[in-house]
Amino acid sequence: MKKIQILLPIIGMILTFSDVYAYTPQQGMDFFDKYKTYANTYDKKLLDMYSPDVKIIREVIKPTGERVSVNIPSKRFFHELKIGQKTAKLKKYKNTYKNVIVQEVPNGIKISAQRQPSKENYWLEMYQIIEETESGPKITEEMMQTKVQRFLNAK
Image (cartoon, rainbow, N blue to C red; front, side, top):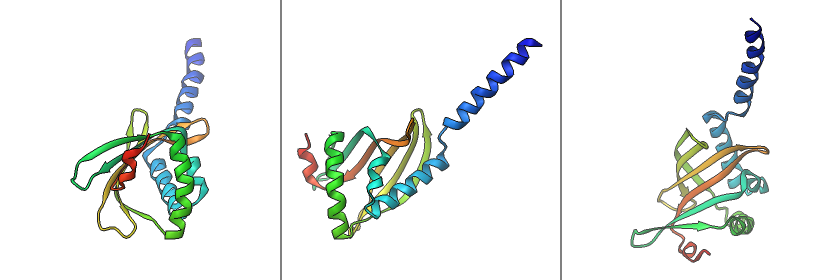
């Protein structure tokens, strides 16, 4: 009986802890909705949605159809995102998303979708991995396809 009295509070703490820190697909969808809003309104809060050491992948689609995967250093990504937001606002650039899929993966939540840049008639693949951190959910990995060839010179 004493063992049960000792184990019950421990089991309760474990269950409570796992419920508090488990990130659900619905929370992932809410996170992505916030991401889209911040991105399409050029809100500086978008920067805070990324982990400081985020893995950024741009899959460049060449005019020939060949695809080249390019890793962008996080420091460069944050610098370009700050500048890009100002340019995007001037051009009223926005992305539209469809076929959004949110699923649990071993390291968090994966959000996959198709993305259509402003004034384009094609759709590009993208995904983000969101992980729960001490400072809340953060994007720890992002892959976006692009037809912008300058990413091939990323170092």
